[in-house]
Image (spheres, rainbow, N blue to C red):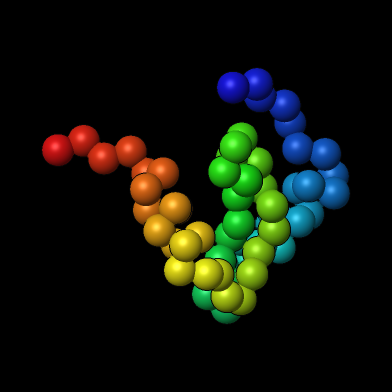
Length: 60
């Protein structure tokens, strides 16, 4: 995975989404293909929740 610093706009959007998550329980959205930040939302579909859970590595 290539790393690049966030530009100013991306940084402001991410900070805003993180605040929304902490203060208003807003979901933080990520692109499934490359895990890039995609914004925030008040509601997400059941399929999005299931995909997010599936994407977390689990080692039992």
